[in-house]
Image (cartoon, rainbow, N blue to C red; front, side, top):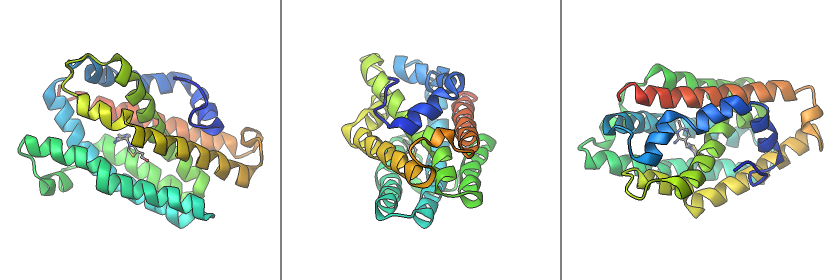
Amino acid sequence: MSGLEHGRTVALLRDGCADDWRSYTHHPFVDGLRDGTLPRAAFLHYLIQDYVFLVHFSRAWSLGVVKAETLEEMKVCAGSVNGFVNHEMALHIETCAAEGIDEVTLFNAVEEFENIAYTRYVMDAGLQGDFLDLLASLAPCCFGYAEIGTRLGVEAAPDTPYRAWIDTYNGSEYQTAMTRLGQMIDGAMTRRLGPAPETSPRWSQLQKRFTTATQLEAAFWGMGLRKA
Ligand SMILES: Cc1ncc(C[n+]2csc(CCO)c2C)c(N)n1
């Protein structure tokens, strides 16, 4: 998957850090989800951390509502917050409940450094910069998982125990939301930087945000594997 399904901006930013993007989307953790060889302890460690990650990511997306300049931008950001809090976190809550881990325990889990670094980096990008700085640092998470979900939907071993995780990100609801998000990002860029944002003096900073967030995603997988 390397086309324009998530818009022009995301394609450019992804191509601007192709090696980092591959390290993130083809990480050994992802191979383990695909083949079913990922140790259960590593998956649960990741999932507990990811619950806390989503709490802080929801805060960052809420900042998007604050920094938006159009109703469409506000709607996409508000929809993302709703998606996390009321849907995406359900996967974490249900999977952990089956292992005897309740939601209060999840909410109070001690954050790993990789988790703190990533979520607070994104939050600070949005606080310090404008809507585009925030989006550039939020984007790798959204579109990376969309790519991974699509690929693993095709490639995963039929008996992988991680099918529910794969289905969450390969599902049409998530994929449709990502298409809409890609369109919104293209519109937000054009509105602020003109029809060729990659020629703007701001582009290198936006690329830096995107690249750093991509590297932080790979580090997040690595954190999960520490419990392998
Ligand atoms: C470390 C980490 N990175 C990405 C996601 C996936 N995710 C989080 S927010 C979001 C976008 C929804 O608009 C998606 C896909 C995750 N769960 N954990």
